Image (cartoon, rainbow, N blue to C red; front, side, top):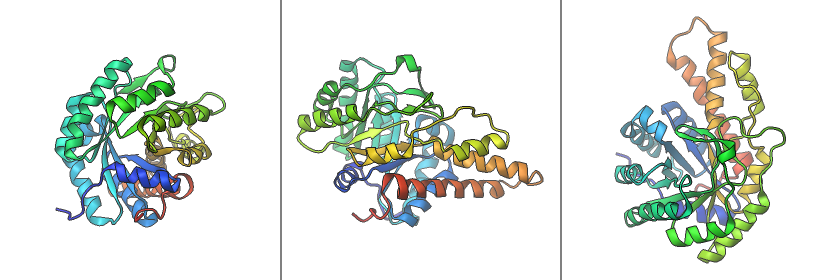
Length: 319
């Protein structure tokens, strides 16, 4: 067993908001992705949130994932939080809290406001006595991520007044807001736009409601780098018109009240495009270590770039 423990997100977010940076929340699906993230965090001395979705729990098994995270704690010195991404109901949140997660997200955004408040408060009331942080969501992001599917016509932006009421009544620790991002690799048609005016209004309303600098969260925030899309397509992929959130917009958000930015699609692209390239250039190879290794390195370099050039977490592990 590792002597180091997982941390909650509360202190992470306080330091991020005070320092004008945002914590990267990186989705974990297997060992190589987790290793790439952990190595990048250690080399840049960045605090990290490792996220596990319902799909990852089904694919890798929660027990395996917990042991991989335990290994990350044993081989790094940086603060690590383990977070459930898009918990659909109280039961999955409870299972993760009881299983050792330090943070959970309850996603009641598909419900009417009153029902979302009730569900979120139920999770908060269970999590807080056990020292676990709770993220909630208000507003609906378009796109697809594992089991979360929302058509563009059904997406809605977060209302500032509702957000203020929501955080005050639920007691949640952070709030994912909808200002124009979306899940998956196809985020925009035409020019990318985020509603930063709305973000500022949400921030002001929520801070006034709770009386302190409240952490906001951006989901659907991968940048879908053109070079990785091109590489994927060059070596047999089919990702026409894939487009993400420009990194300068994420950098701006990290300096204006957003304490956590989720990154998943970029990690998948980095790994998959690199493995596709390897298969085409080395058709005689069949040892998984020979192609998963370069995939892991691609994830690591992608994450280091995010930490240093986009989110600003580099050097803040010991804040």
